[in-house]
Length: 281
Image 1 (cartoon, helix red, strand yellow):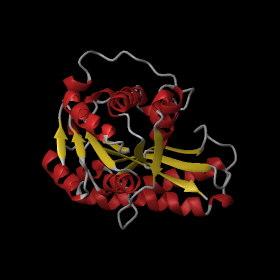
Image 2: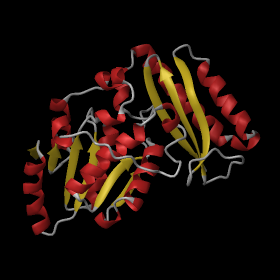
Image 3: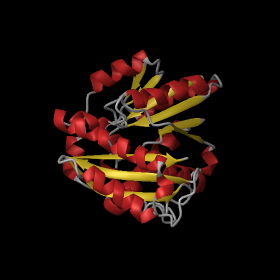
C-alpha cells in the first residue's frame, strides 16, 4: 500500500494508474476507521481496479472547536486496517496541504443544507463541500463511496457532484449502514462513549426501528414525539432532533409514504453526539 501525504505525491501515483487505464474507486474518511469504512473499501475493491482512501480530519466542517479536538485519531491502527483490506493508496495530508489559504467558497444547496444537521451545525455542510470538492478535483475517481448513516451528507454530496462538478463524471455510491450486533450504527465517535453510554446508545436504533415498523399507527407529529420521549427516558440520552423527511428534498413530511420517507435522529449520549436514520419501507 502506498502512502501519499502531498498532492504532488498523490498525483504522481495517480498518473500511472490513469495511464494504465485502471478505474479508481475513492473512499474519503476522517480516519478512526471501523467496519463501516471497511465495507465501503470492499465495495470499491469489487467495482474498481484501484482503491484510494483519504484520511483527513477537516476543520472546516466542525462548528464546535471542542468537537474537532476530541475527534478520535489513530493513524497506526488505520493503516493496519487499510493494509488488511487491500487498499492501494492512502492519502493523508496535513491541514496546510488542503487549505494553503482560506477557502471562502460558499455553496448553495437549494435548502437541503438548512434542515436537520444544517439547522444545528451551522456551516457544517459548506465545510464538507469545500473538502469533498477539493478531494474530487485531486483524485478524479470513477466512483466515490459514502455510508448511508450520514443520510443528509450523501444528499449534499450528490447535489455538489451534479451541480458543481458535473465535468468530473463521478458516480456517487451510497452504501448501507453497518451496525453493531445490538443495532448501534458504527461511527468513529462510538470510541468516545463510556461503558454506560455505550449500553444506552443501542436504544437509539432500537427505538427508530420499532416505530418505523409501526408508523401507520401514528401521525407524523405523534411518531416524532413517541420516539423522542422513549429515547429521553434513558438518563444518558438527550434527543437533539427527530425528523421524518422526504427522501428527495429532505423536508419534513406531512404524510408518511412507505419507500419514500426516512426517520432521522441526532442524540447526545453524554457529551457524544450520535446520528442515525431508518428508512420507512
